[in-house]
Image 1: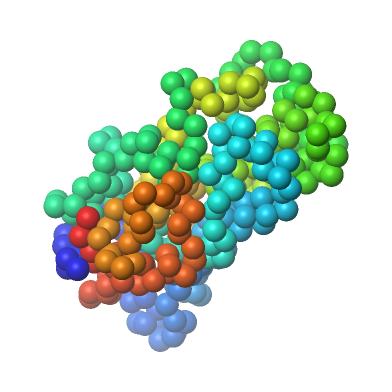
Image 2: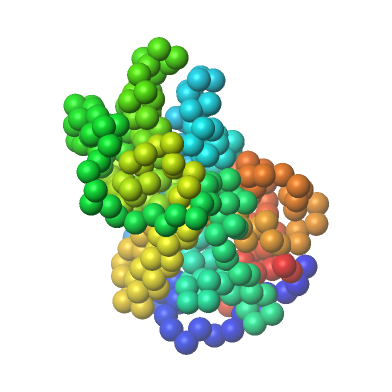
Amino acid sequence: MVAPLEQPAPHATLEQDQRDAATATENSGRDHGAADIADADPGEAICAPGSAPSVTSRISVQKVCSLVGKFNKFKRDLVEEIGFGGMLGIKMLAKLNLKFSAWLMERVDVESSTLKIDEQRVLQIQDHDVQKVFSLPCGTRSICPDTTEPSEACKEFMRASAYLSKGAHSLKAAEAYLLRDDINGDSSNVQIDCFKIAFVIFVVGHLLAPSTKHDYITIDFWAALNDISQIKEFNWCAYVLEHLNRAVGKLKTDIRNRNITVHLVGCHLFLQVFYLDNLDLGPLSKTKDHLPRISLFDYESVKKMIEVITSNVDGDTSFAGASV
């Protein structure tokens, strides 16, 4: 193992905010305990009274795993057809270490597309890295908001969503459509396309680009859904990275402003898997000849890997204790 090389940051960090809060609590004579951000449930705020900031996230591997676990072979084949089969092999990660996610996000340099642990350990982040982790389509067409007339399938999904819940932006509506019993070999082409649309909306909203809102998604990718037969032509990996980069910027702004709550958006799970997969962790390292990478990372192994690289020096928690 290589000892972590920590350098003083020129700006406020999550660790500094937590130390300041702990000091203030101690000086006030109130012993509330430290905020246990590690092992945080997805979407759950972690904040001891008198401490700051709390770290939250609405990313939910549990919801994705629970849903796909109810799919029969016919529905699983439909997911494979649109190139999102990597979502079917994700292990149930009942808890995510949000402190680890925040630590990684602080070290992402958006301009250079790198994850910089220190001067010696710098990892380039590219579209194909997202593809390796999730096996998402990495086509040549960019995903951008579209104002063209929606397809019949998109219109039908909007109508069905309004009936099932609060409209197409509701993740509950997407889930309800995906669990319909009448999606089978006798379904119409429009119904099949609606199922595929619902699946993309569901996994983007809960995993690939989650926002701050509960069970709600801003659908800025209608153009990629307008013709389901062409969905693989779009670069979904770049889409995930674009939203993650925005999330990094938001996190750093929240930290500079010393916000009481730091809400992690974007797919910070990708950063965890990408980073751990590039470390030399001896027998804990995953075999390199298997795709998608996410399917190798179960809860217990991820927890052990994080424990091995974690150190605490002068109140600072670091996850830099391994070579790359």
